[in-house]
Image 1 (spheres, one colour):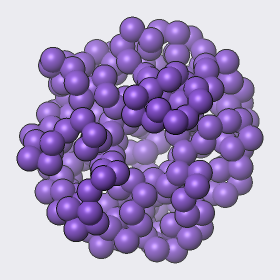
Image 2 (cartoon, rainbow, N blue to C red):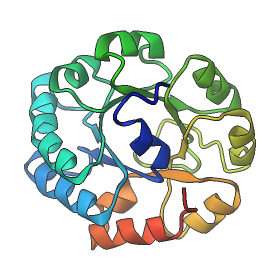
Image 3 (spheres, rainbow, N blue to C red):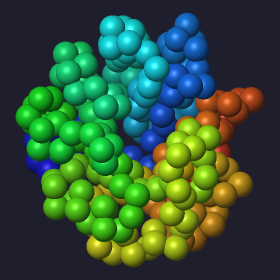
Image 4 (spheres, rainbow, N blue to C red):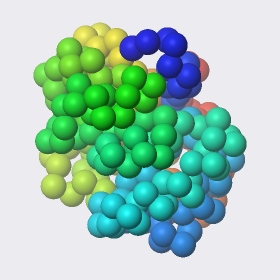
Length: 216
């Protein structure tokens, strides 16, 4: 990973990765939720929209980008490399069954960081060998966001940090009550989705999560 990339420092410092998932947020509420998450203090924000058309996803990404830029929060597009390249987002994220990191980087260019989902120690190590810029590691717990994925638990978090030097974002069923045991297991960074988006006070929930994470 090249330190000449503008978002490199932000990625390295990031502790709380939010995902604005259209399974939980109406398209009409995307701008307001983006603003709230950024004001709360998310360090990274991903747009994930599994059921929308490419045109709809690009439109929402373009609405989000001025807000995230104003707050200095890198915007990451899930799956859709062409959209990330077209709008000039800071990052893109690919799954295990999606495009290889090298292909993603060829599409989005060297200034855009590329993250990869991993669901085991072996996949985490392989993603580092693939030159991903960061990894998601999980799901730690059963989660409605990814109901088809078998949870991997928290027992391998510390080992993953020993074997992988990339930023590791633990994901899957992460919420405020579970955070102490996740951190005790060795996590330094987390992804939170439904617990954030469904919180009664989203900005406050962001702040409470960040207060319980280790300092970067």
